[in-house]
Length: 154
Image 1 (cartoon, rainbow, N blue to C red):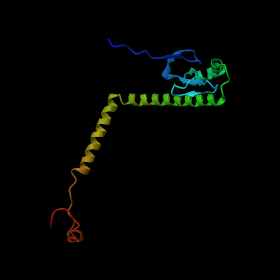
Image 2: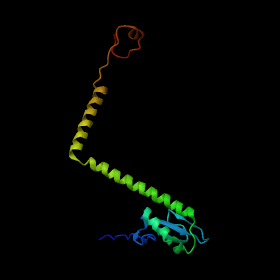
Image 3: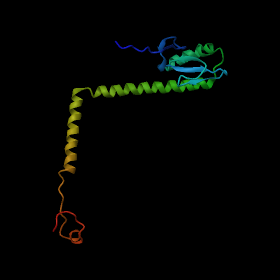
Image 4: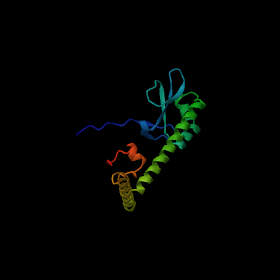
């Protein structure tokens, strides 16, 4: 039986729930005392984790959870960066929801049949325009006399 890898879990300082480490944002206080975001998860220093949820981030700001975790003041620019990341993750989740709705629409059998018919008709039109097109001889005139026509010989 293969071994199952453990997924690292961390506690969010906002909602106090245990979640996968990859789904959280890491805020780091470096040994020099500078507070910044850590997107890679490898910066040295003390780390605290926050959800990508806007409500959770607001709760962490209101309760001053990051300040308590680092025992120092967190600059406003760090909160601004967290807001940007949280908003983009909300937009991403909305896009994923719309994408799921779009694909669920095409799961309907009637829509599949309509799409198949449309694709079949476009394939026929393309074939008619390309393969079944006849080469037309120019009228006995200037093009045939000049030799610009590369069709059948006259």
